[in-house]
Length: 194
Image (cartoon, rainbow, N blue to C red; front, side):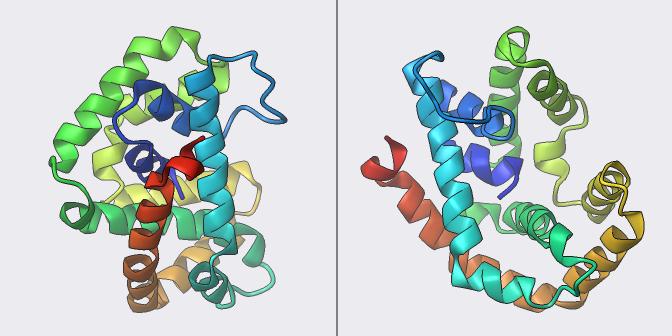
């Protein structure tokens, strides 16, 4: 899952929201060096990723990507699922997406100075470009993936992977709508959030 889904699954706890971001930047074992609630947020992020990566629906989607695109399939699926989450937001969250985004952005701004540099840069991008609301825009989705393709030095493979995802959008949407409610339920379970 990408940022929007991770923040959504973190719920109301500010430290879980920060952990949802830091899960992409803090590597290795969690040793208690960070506040306990922050480590819980990072663990939740990791568990969400593990559950997502192992889910049969997502494995079935990965099959559609050719050998040159397969390395990129995970990130393409993640971002397309954030795109779909914006399109179906009202099914999964009561406050409007704008209200949710504002709350998360305020948390990110309030704690920006305490974040590792790479996480702080990403937090700044999320806030400055209103990404949580704009992940539902085709131009933002494709632009984000194309920039990532450049960073990974695989621009052609990324464009091809994006085309595969669009050609399978109906299947992506069906998979998302079947998978995401399961993820919401599991991520909300107390034992999953320890």
